[in-house]
Image (cartoon, rainbow, N blue to C red; front, side, top):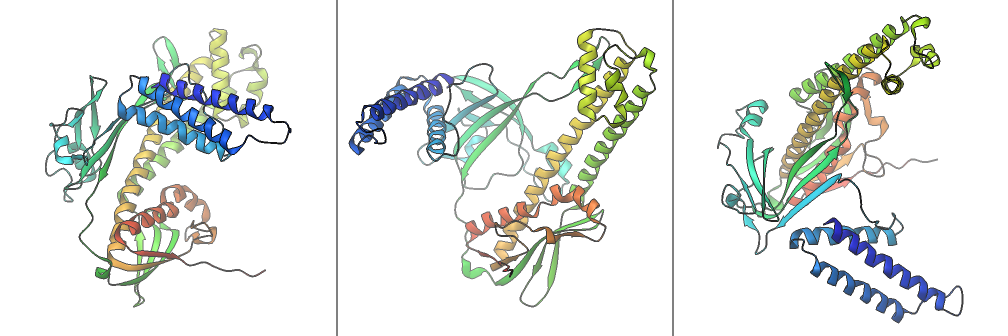
Length: 434
């Protein structure tokens, strides 16, 4: 796939060279090649890309992915929205393996143990029962599968985030891996070492879902929706206010389990900050006479040093290989801080994913309930304005929850749901005079 990419990029480079030669051949410096010459140039380029693609041993679906990526990059380049595609070399940092299912797609039921290219072990029927807690659902949703890559069976473990829609068809599947190089440290009996890179994988499925059996006429009424972010207290964070024609108001809140996870993330970040403060004090307590040569200036500014400064000091001491009293202090801080912040990032990702799932469901419920929704509390681009980011507990507390509440994120899910259900969503514009 990389070879195919580089060959297509080389074909474009030749196309650009031919274009510049044609420009140079024009009698006037400001003249451009004729439309006929440009058409022939483009036809020659497309023919070359077709020949390169045919000669490639890459499977059809992966071939489609690579060529689509190349031409998308070219489109951005000609629109002056990016640089031209460049050859790729060196270590792999991202891998994509694709399958496309023709003839209308694969019935989703056949993915459970019956498809050669992609198969999953079935999960229990009660996995997504609303009577189960999220923790119980997640435990039951764990499964395994096999993804065929050029005749090789790649085995994997995964978690199904939601049940597959009934009667849906699987149109495409992609196994995507990304190489991450987390900024971290691991302390062990020999001293310690930087956290090595690792790969994170995801399975992405594209489904075609039959249209829902409802019509716009089934919607009953119109509602006004004020997009807002309000912190009532530590247990109640709202993201919108719904008002129906009767004047009845309904405040929409984030579930408490999402807030509990977010509080845990904030607690982990506070622990990491406290650990930083303790470490700085321990380093400041080292007498100047015992400080490593060449690091006196860094020790003098430890009272204002942040985490990056301590990382640089740790790397300096390790590169020198000198046994110094500051080294075990820094190693302990780096290892403990890595564990705390890594767990905090994991909790944050889980919380944001749970929030998106909840927003998705609330948006669909509103669009099934109302024929028309009028949005207020959004700026010119449909994003919440600062005037609507307020709280009864003070602006500093709200800032801790703004990333989690993200009313604009809910608005995007509402627009998507409206497109599927036929609900009309209008944004109320505020006109200000100067």
